[in-house]
Image (cartoon, rainbow, N blue to C red; front, side):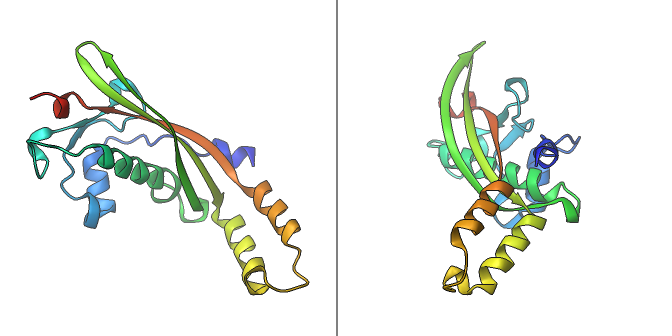
Length: 170
C-alpha cells in the first residue's frame, strides 16, 4: 500500500489549470474565472478573476473553491494516471480552511483528507460485495470484508491555495 500512496502526487504539467479542467470537465468547468497555477503552494495559488464571474459585483467563490479542489483531486487520482493505475471510491473531506494575508494579498488555504482505493482493490471488493447480495447473504463475512476494505484504503491529505484578493476588493 505504501507504493500506491507514494504514487499519488501533485500534477506537474505546463498546461494551465483552467485549460485542463475545461478540457476534462467541459460541462461544469468550461470558462472558469481563474488564472494562476494549480494551487499546490501559495506562490502557485489559483487566482480568481472577478470580472469573469457571472455576477462580478457579488462573486460567489467559496463553492467554486471546493468544486475546483474536487476536480484537481480527480485529475490526480484518475485522469493524469495510466488506465491500470487509477483510483475509485474517492471520498474528499474538508479538514481545515484558513484565510491568510501576505504581501498585500489574501489567500484561502483549504486542506482536505482524501480516501480512495486502487481500481484493482475496488473491483475485488465490489465483486465480493455484489456476489453476496450487497452483504445480505447470511454466510457473508461482513467483518472480514470490512477488514479487507480498510486494509486496501489509501488515505492522504492535500492542501490547495486560492488567491482571493481579486474577489474581496471592490
